[in-house]
Image (cartoon, rainbow, N blue to C red):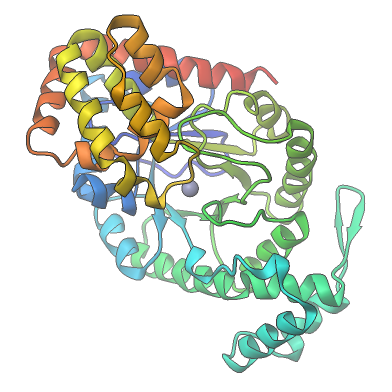
Length: 410
Ligand SMILES: [Zn+2]
């Protein structure tokens, strides 16, 4: 019952923060031709829920064993930022490593003057990241992508270097460490820059992909650009669908020409309006990653089976919201939080306000770590999900069928 590498097969990642969601995930995954990733957790999520990579892996393995699952499945050690992150997840048997080099991304590059861009390029040269030869590769080169010739001007190159030069060097170092730590074991790599402020332009994507190649990164199977518009947690895409599609087509053409590797859509939970586009444009070269939406379905199970428990979780989440929201990309505000906390709701109105409304969803979404490490609430929620495992799995199955159907609808 070991996870495998999935190569370029179209895939879907089911993050499970509770360790109890795999039966529901499996029920949905079986109906579609996406290779499923059942063990998937970012280092940040593991820290927030105080789970180890072994626990995440074992939760998936034991559920799949229980279900007599004989198919192929993947395991994603998500958002790895350091050598140590790689070592602890490789030791637990993860086979798919998502490198997050966002510490090296300069989010201010889009608004830097040419002088400031030049200074940053000089600073990176002095740090040994570039020389005449490596910069010349870009100023002199031209790349054919889907019938279009892509070239860098001095300015666009300097902006790409300023924005991603340090990140791509960091990604190269982390990729080399993954290869070293994996030794004889099969492994695959994703590189993600989705959690940064500035969208990745197609030319910057080209730069990033060429650099990963030039730095000898092996087994790159997917890349997650930061898309235009807003990919907020737990709610649908916010932005211009036409602009999203035309940018996605360019990203896809680069991934196909330079790899091929898959386009990876992070924060993929509940992005129903873009799924048909994503499915249509990317076809089989696609990976979609979800996580928090499964926690919300667990809370829906609690709400439908034990309103008192849900009420306690909601009250606690309201208290934690202002602190916990800090590192997440969401629109729900302190005022929304205070207003919802005042309301006295039951039954369907309670479910609508918390689980079918964007603000309620985001308030619950960002506070998962506090709930799942609270000494009272965590055991109560786990016991509820164990007592109501049929309902929990049914809710997850139904929810992910909606996701996978929309992705297949394009
Ligand atoms: Zn991500």
